[in-house]
Image (tube, rainbow, N blue to C red; front, side, top):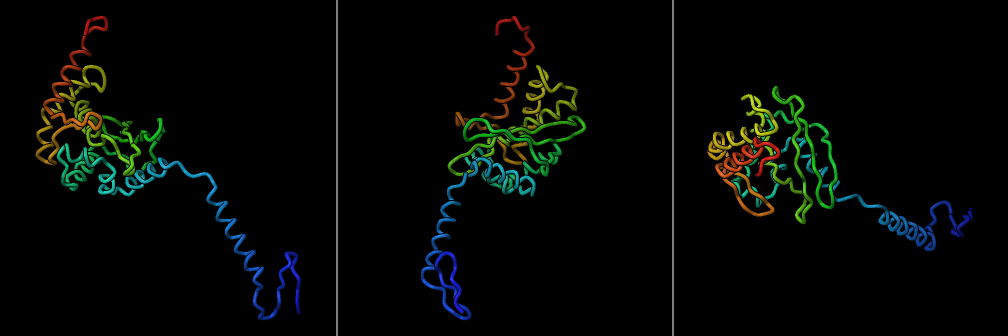
Length: 228
């Protein structure tokens, strides 16, 4: 028995071979479907890279997190051994009780960069927030300045426990104290020499950072109408 279909192809039952015209039609529809699929809107690559970093955080994969930081920055501050960088991040997250499995609040700022905010909770900072930027680069996402931002959060925590405020002159006084007292320990334990500025490509040692904080504290203590 032969049944004629609306598209002109003959369907012969049983055990008949589909005609060449039907095969060509199927191939045409397949190619058209693939072509239309490729014309759909493509996701923002920053979204994919942000998701990659958030995935590392949720898994608490410290090796993955380290690989998403700048190698130039790591080498400059002394993290030539990735295991030291991993250890520092792990220890800092533990001290700050960073909620790595939380869904962070995120924003997009301009092209190729977006801030990420993670909550952290300590007795001194029950509503703390760890904020840093992830930059889009040719090599992929880079968590910019994460190491030094963690140092600043640790300095703030120690300052709060020591009776310093987290703003005004106290913030800078607490940081100067932390840099001088804990910088040597950070260097001994992790090989961490200080802060590396990716923009100016310059390293500042703990003592240099302490001196800068001293200046900022002095300026912050001056009356608003005083010359600076």
